Figure: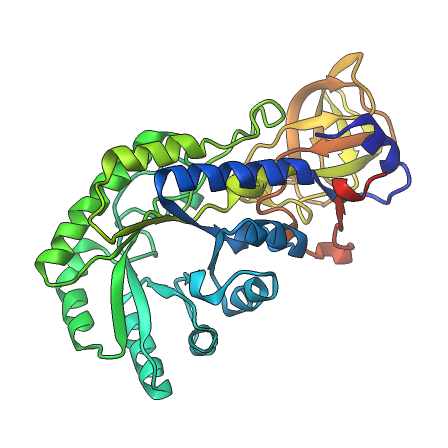
Length: 385
């Protein structure tokens, strides 16, 4: 959490910046590790959620494996302590160059999302004289009950292979001599807080496993993907994601065969609530019917609200009362550059520090230099004296 001593240290710093509470990160990672061990589930951290070196080293140092979506993420994961033989390589558009990078690195497996991708990996692996371990991403057609932009597991999504294409899939797997089939991969979407979604996903996984087994494919691995959500409304009180609920749901709905393993790919859940954007009020603007607190950060710093109407808790750290109602907006000339509408918070003044909470996932990693503004740097609680 943001302590008073940390707030005093902020006076010496240029804003905006991402403030990482490393105690929260370590506690979250430790909870994941103990819970995963308890239920026999293996996690591969989704590097795309936050690729900050210090964050990656903390996660890899705890023994958690990695899930990468690009060749550059594979290189970054290896440089930050993740073992190649624990890396899952995802992505709908793996290029030839990225496939070669992954094969040379010796990643654990490719999660393949199309029949054509299987054929391309088979050809490249054959040319390199190696075999590629693969899992097939199948579309479970499960509604993640979340925003349409982060729903990824329905029949009409661009991701994965739907059941109507299974005959062609099985034929392709049978003739690709440079692929080693290992299992099934599924992903319903992101920011899932309803465990019934995971229960349904588990049941779908069991159904798909039977289909593959009947066609002569040994399913050694079941991967339920990521998507475990966090509490964006009360992040200061409820910062620990429900990893216990997820693992319990898996254990109650999937019976593993001897030697079979179960995997998940959490990203947001590990890192979202360990970071806050710290920004200053540049101006306070009085309208006829509303007031605006205009910050020195914007949608280029945190794009989630503008991209898919994501909501983050926003707090005036410098003034707790009197309370006023106002909008908190960013510095970019776009109407969608808004962080809070009708916020009831401490009255804003020029120079006040504001915190945008739960910014650890898809925050700094998506920070950009729109309008040629500087990238917001990282500040760590361990370094605050």
